[in-house]
Amino acid sequence: MAIRPAAISTCVGGEREPSDPHAASATTSQDLRTPNEVKQAVTGAGNADKGQVQMALARIHGLRGVPAQADAADAVAVALTHLLAAPMRAVAARAGAR
Image (cartoon, rainbow, N blue to C red; front, top):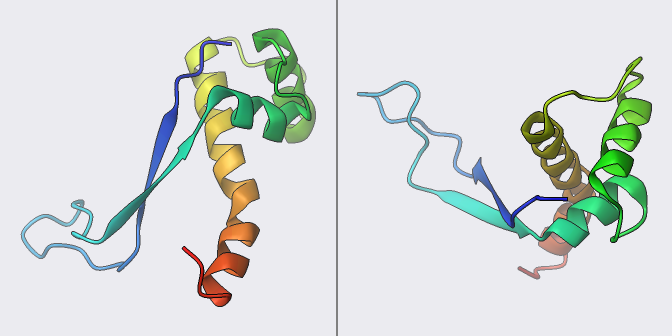
């Protein structure tokens, strides 16, 4: 699978610049995911190939077919990985870890 390490930027402060309603605040964080982490999160196997990731995404989202565009499937896989990691980030934040 040709997923490169991905950076997921999230707005921490929730504030926007008044001059630009679409600009993120200066307080952002990035979570980096390796291709194997994404494959592991989506398929359960870090060595899954692109077809396995696409099939897993179709199954998870109840699609009739696999996503046709490889880049779109990669983006959805990275986003899903980020969402699945959210509970662990919350636990770490409550424990004071970062």
